[in-house]
Length: 69
Image (cartoon, rainbow, N blue to C red; front, side):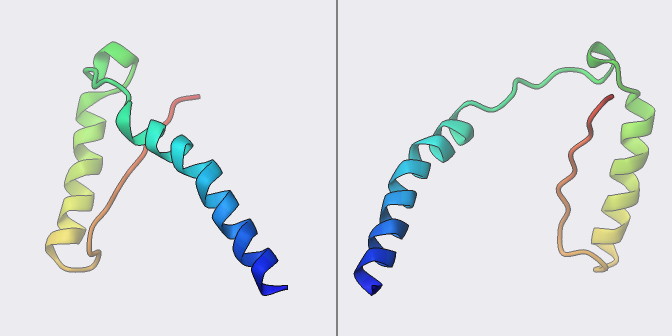
């Protein structure tokens, strides 16, 4: 039973590794906030608020994704 589980894990790893590598080697190109329909002052306020939390050691670090629609 253990060899089957081990084989399944290795197989899944081999199948997923190229997909993960493709995602990390081709990131989205950067664009100005206004060009993509976002407000630069609002994004700056989000950044400042989260930076303050990091500076006060309330958060060890932050990654934010902002989506539209």
